Image (cartoon, helix red, strand yellow):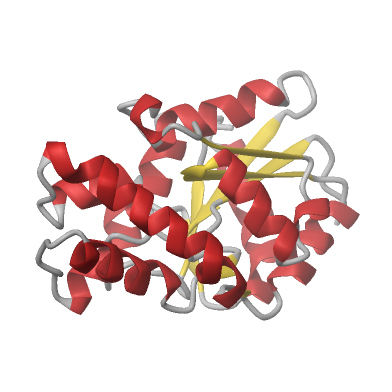
Amino acid sequence: MTISRLLVLFDLDGTLVDPAGSITGGIAAALSASGLPVPPAADLERMVGPALKESLTAIAGVPADRLERVITEYRRGYRETGMAASMPYPGIADAVRSLQAEGALVAVATQKPEPLARELLALQGLGHLFDSIHGSPADERLAAADGKVSIVRAALDRHEGEYSTAVMIGDRSHDVHGASANGVPCIGVAWGFAQDGELEAAGAAAVVQFPEDLASAVHSCVRTAGAHGTV
């Protein structure tokens, strides 16, 4: 089946790339180095996906006057060791190529700062696969309050006139909400960092277990949404 004029947006951490503990470990190290308490492991995992500033404030309880120091410490460690420790999920590059071969545009929409997202994708040999990459500002203090909503919108705007239908693929509820706010269905992936039932409760159109299931899930999502006039 050939899909023309389809835009598929991918989240990054937990969807394309397995951080392999570099995010949770890096946050823990940055908090410890800043003299702040480290949350339990389950809370650290909840911090993978949303904007770092948001997670540090809402989950780790970092005071506003210490936020910039913690972020700086975390980014330093991530660039030194975290990016190299991360790895693409097995089969995900082939899934992206499969969609491209069917005529789809593919893009990245992540809350990671855009320059860092580009570095990570290039390092992991994935950057060349995508038609565009969209993320938060390099200065995280300038990030939009609506997070993923603005980033998905930026990706849609970048490809305006080039597609007729769009689908988001992500591993957390904020991916679903960011897509939904822009009128785009979201397919959840089970190999990321969502809690049990999180993606379903958020309204994901489907949840797939393996990267090789993505193409068929996209086909089904597009047919269903088209039948209901929502794409």
